[in-house]
Image 1 (cartoon, rainbow, N blue to C red):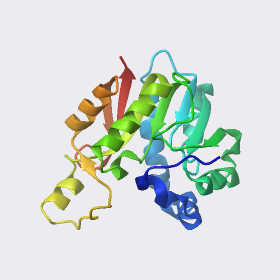
Image 2 (cartoon, rainbow, N blue to C red; image 1 turned 180 degrees about the vertical axis):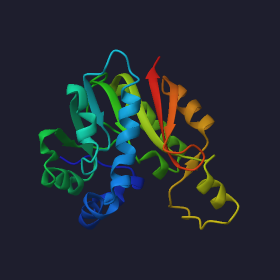
Image 3 (cartoon, rainbow, N blue to C red; image 1 turned 30 degrees about the horizontal axis):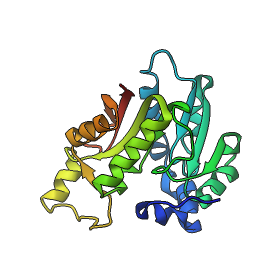
Length: 213
Protein backbone atom coordinates (compact mmCIF):
# COMPACT_ATOMS: atom_id res chain seq x y z
CA UNK A 1 0.00 0.00 0.00
CA UNK A 2 1.35 3.41 -0.93
CA UNK A 3 2.14 5.64 2.01
CA UNK A 4 1.19 9.34 2.00
CA UNK A 5 3.98 11.71 1.07
CA UNK A 6 4.90 15.27 1.88
CA UNK A 7 3.53 17.95 -0.48
CA UNK A 8 7.14 18.67 -1.49
CA UNK A 9 7.62 15.14 -2.81
CA UNK A 10 4.40 14.75 -4.80
CA UNK A 11 5.75 15.99 -8.14
CA UNK A 12 8.02 12.93 -8.57
CA UNK A 13 5.03 10.60 -8.80
CA UNK A 14 4.50 11.61 -12.44
CA UNK A 15 5.63 8.98 -14.97
CA UNK A 16 7.22 11.59 -17.27
CA UNK A 17 9.27 13.03 -14.40
CA UNK A 18 10.49 9.54 -13.47
CA UNK A 19 11.47 8.86 -17.08
CA UNK A 20 13.41 12.15 -17.26
CA UNK A 21 15.30 11.33 -14.05
CA UNK A 22 16.16 7.88 -15.38
CA UNK A 23 17.52 9.26 -18.67
CA UNK A 24 17.95 12.94 -19.58
CA UNK A 25 18.33 14.38 -16.04
CA UNK A 26 21.73 12.77 -15.45
CA UNK A 27 22.73 11.99 -19.03
CA UNK A 28 26.25 13.46 -18.92
CA UNK A 29 29.08 11.54 -17.30
CA UNK A 30 29.85 14.44 -14.95
CA UNK A 31 26.24 14.66 -13.80
CA UNK A 32 26.04 10.91 -13.29
CA UNK A 33 29.26 10.56 -11.32
CA UNK A 34 29.28 13.73 -9.19
CA UNK A 35 26.96 12.53 -6.40
CA UNK A 36 28.29 8.96 -6.58
CA UNK A 37 31.85 10.11 -5.92
CA UNK A 38 30.93 12.28 -2.92
CA UNK A 39 28.75 9.62 -1.31
CA UNK A 40 31.45 6.99 -1.82
CA UNK A 41 34.07 9.25 -0.24
CA UNK A 42 31.94 9.87 2.85
CA UNK A 43 31.00 6.22 3.29
CA UNK A 44 34.72 5.41 3.22
CA UNK A 45 35.20 7.70 6.22
CA UNK A 46 33.20 5.34 8.44
CA UNK A 47 35.37 2.89 10.39
CA UNK A 48 34.63 0.06 10.70
CA UNK A 49 32.97 -0.09 7.26
CA UNK A 50 29.19 -0.22 7.18
CA UNK A 51 27.49 -3.43 6.06
CA UNK A 52 24.03 -2.11 5.16
CA UNK A 53 22.82 1.16 3.58
CA UNK A 54 19.36 2.58 2.95
CA UNK A 55 18.92 4.99 0.01
CA UNK A 56 16.00 7.28 0.95
CA UNK A 57 14.56 8.41 -1.37
CA UNK A 58 16.20 6.14 -3.94
CA UNK A 59 14.50 7.56 -7.06
CA UNK A 60 15.49 5.58 -10.14
CA UNK A 61 18.31 3.79 -8.34
CA UNK A 62 21.23 5.75 -9.74
CA UNK A 63 23.20 5.50 -6.46
CA UNK A 64 22.72 1.76 -6.02
CA UNK A 65 25.91 0.63 -7.75
CA UNK A 66 28.09 2.99 -5.73
CA UNK A 67 26.36 2.13 -2.46
CA UNK A 68 26.85 -1.59 -3.09
CA UNK A 69 30.64 -1.20 -3.16
CA UNK A 70 32.71 -3.19 -0.65
CA UNK A 71 29.94 -5.77 -0.41
CA UNK A 72 27.39 -3.53 1.30
CA UNK A 73 23.75 -4.64 1.36
CA UNK A 74 21.65 -1.88 -0.22
CA UNK A 75 17.98 -1.10 0.31
CA UNK A 76 15.85 1.56 -1.36
CA UNK A 77 12.64 3.39 -0.52
CA UNK A 78 10.72 5.95 -2.57
CA UNK A 79 7.26 7.48 -2.42
CA UNK A 80 6.97 7.34 -6.23
CA UNK A 81 6.17 3.95 -7.67
CA UNK A 82 7.00 5.43 -11.11
CA UNK A 83 10.56 6.03 -9.85
CA UNK A 84 10.73 2.49 -8.50
CA UNK A 85 9.46 1.16 -11.83
CA UNK A 86 12.28 2.99 -13.61
CA UNK A 87 14.81 1.51 -11.20
CA UNK A 88 13.61 -1.99 -12.07
CA UNK A 89 13.76 -1.19 -15.79
CA UNK A 90 17.38 -0.05 -15.42
CA UNK A 91 18.42 -3.36 -13.88
CA UNK A 92 18.62 -1.99 -10.34
CA UNK A 93 15.94 -4.45 -9.25
CA UNK A 94 18.57 -6.57 -7.48
CA UNK A 95 18.32 -4.06 -4.62
CA UNK A 96 15.42 -4.57 -2.20
CA UNK A 97 13.09 -1.60 -2.75
CA UNK A 98 9.78 -0.65 -1.15
CA UNK A 99 7.30 2.18 -1.50
CA UNK A 100 7.41 4.70 1.32
CA UNK A 101 7.93 8.32 2.28
CA UNK A 102 11.34 9.48 3.53
CA UNK A 103 9.50 11.58 6.12
CA UNK A 104 7.70 8.49 7.46
CA UNK A 105 10.02 5.56 6.79
CA UNK A 106 8.42 2.10 6.91
CA UNK A 107 11.31 0.51 8.84
CA UNK A 108 12.09 -0.32 12.45
CA UNK A 109 14.57 1.72 14.48
CA UNK A 110 18.28 1.08 13.83
CA UNK A 111 17.48 -1.09 10.81
CA UNK A 112 20.53 0.01 8.74
CA UNK A 113 24.13 0.87 9.49
CA UNK A 114 23.86 4.05 7.42
CA UNK A 115 21.22 6.01 5.52
CA UNK A 116 21.86 8.17 2.45
CA UNK A 117 19.43 10.95 1.55
CA UNK A 118 20.33 12.61 -1.75
CA UNK A 119 18.66 15.62 -3.39
CA UNK A 120 15.61 15.89 -1.14
CA UNK A 121 16.44 18.37 1.65
CA UNK A 122 16.66 21.40 -0.66
CA UNK A 123 13.06 20.76 -1.74
CA UNK A 124 11.76 21.07 1.83
CA UNK A 125 10.96 24.70 2.63
CA UNK A 126 9.35 23.98 5.99
CA UNK A 127 11.74 23.74 8.91
CA UNK A 128 9.30 21.31 10.52
CA UNK A 129 9.50 19.02 7.49
CA UNK A 130 13.29 19.14 7.47
CA UNK A 131 13.36 18.29 11.18
CA UNK A 132 10.97 15.42 10.54
CA UNK A 133 13.23 14.13 7.75
CA UNK A 134 16.33 14.23 9.94
CA UNK A 135 14.49 12.56 12.83
CA UNK A 136 13.39 9.71 10.56
CA UNK A 137 16.85 9.23 9.05
CA UNK A 138 18.37 9.16 12.54
CA UNK A 139 15.71 6.74 13.79
CA UNK A 140 16.44 4.02 11.23
CA UNK A 141 20.24 4.50 11.14
CA UNK A 142 22.45 2.65 13.60
CA UNK A 143 25.60 4.66 12.96
CA UNK A 144 25.40 7.50 10.45
CA UNK A 145 23.46 9.43 7.84
CA UNK A 146 24.70 11.19 4.71
CA UNK A 147 22.47 14.03 3.53
CA UNK A 148 22.80 16.39 0.59
CA UNK A 149 21.57 20.00 0.65
CA UNK A 150 22.06 23.27 -1.18
CA UNK A 151 24.73 25.38 0.54
CA UNK A 152 23.73 29.03 1.09
CA UNK A 153 27.43 29.99 1.04
CA UNK A 154 27.84 28.89 -2.58
CA UNK A 155 28.32 31.27 -5.51
CA UNK A 156 25.01 30.34 -7.22
CA UNK A 157 23.06 30.88 -3.97
CA UNK A 158 24.74 34.27 -3.45
CA UNK A 159 23.92 35.33 -7.02
CA UNK A 160 20.26 34.45 -6.40
CA UNK A 161 20.16 36.47 -3.17
CA UNK A 162 21.53 39.62 -4.85
CA UNK A 163 19.30 39.23 -7.90
CA UNK A 164 21.99 38.26 -10.44
CA UNK A 165 20.40 34.83 -10.86
CA UNK A 166 16.70 34.20 -11.28
CA UNK A 167 15.03 32.82 -8.17
CA UNK A 168 13.12 29.55 -8.50
CA UNK A 169 10.26 31.09 -6.53
CA UNK A 170 8.37 30.02 -3.44
CA UNK A 171 8.18 26.37 -4.56
CA UNK A 172 11.72 26.12 -5.91
CA UNK A 173 14.79 24.57 -4.35
CA UNK A 174 16.03 26.25 -1.17
CA UNK A 175 19.64 26.84 -0.07
CA UNK A 176 20.44 26.75 3.64
CA UNK A 177 23.53 27.74 5.65
CA UNK A 178 25.70 24.97 7.05
CA UNK A 179 25.19 26.16 10.61
CA UNK A 180 21.44 25.58 10.24
CA UNK A 181 22.05 22.04 8.99
CA UNK A 182 24.39 21.36 11.92
CA UNK A 183 21.80 22.61 14.45
CA UNK A 184 18.90 20.66 12.93
CA UNK A 185 20.98 17.49 12.70
CA UNK A 186 22.00 17.91 16.34
CA UNK A 187 18.34 18.21 17.35
CA UNK A 188 17.80 14.79 15.72
CA UNK A 189 20.68 13.26 17.70
CA UNK A 190 23.23 13.51 14.88
CA UNK A 191 26.68 15.10 14.97
CA UNK A 192 27.86 16.65 11.70
CA UNK A 193 31.38 15.33 11.10
CA UNK A 194 32.33 16.30 7.55
CA UNK A 195 31.05 18.28 4.55
CA UNK A 196 31.90 17.44 0.94
CA UNK A 197 31.15 19.36 -2.27
CA UNK A 198 32.61 19.03 -5.75
CA UNK A 199 33.96 22.61 -5.47
CA UNK A 200 33.48 24.49 -2.19
CA UNK A 201 31.70 27.85 -2.68
CA UNK A 202 31.05 26.97 -6.35
CA UNK A 203 28.86 23.86 -6.11
CA UNK A 204 25.51 24.32 -4.41
CA UNK A 205 24.99 20.59 -3.95
CA UNK A 206 26.83 19.64 -0.74
CA UNK A 207 26.87 16.46 1.34
CA UNK A 208 27.23 16.18 5.09
CA UNK A 209 28.23 13.07 7.02
CA UNK A 210 26.53 13.00 10.44
CA UNK A 211 27.02 10.27 13.05
CA UNK A 212 24.68 9.06 15.78
CA UNK A 213 25.59 10.39 19.20
